[in-house]
Length: 160
Image (cartoon, rainbow, N blue to C red; front, side, top):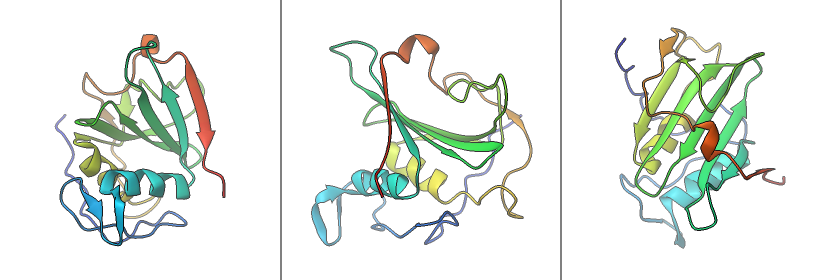
């Protein structure tokens, strides 16, 4: 199966607490916040929208891998930031036996630079919306996070 069409960017998501961020097409400073990049603003937005953050560190000298998960109840949105150049995101059905960091089937997937990946997952229509993806697709190789790269892990949710 082919890669699904990218979602159309909209000014705000249907998730509670969503708000707009700078309209830059590449990472840079956000208008009105000179010390905050667009990537920083998008990561902060994930936190405001109650994504659960998982910080993975493969070893003491390696860079951390950051993942964020939003559980819709039966469906989850997952974003994995591998480094400053690439991130992936996908929506998957959840339930017993499903590994959210290494799924086989998803409703949606994208892999781009971190800013575009976060924009995509934040503008994806919620499950049950008429425009939300509903067809299960096989996730291509290279997405997710192998078990051997998941320890140690630190899990946290942004405080309200």
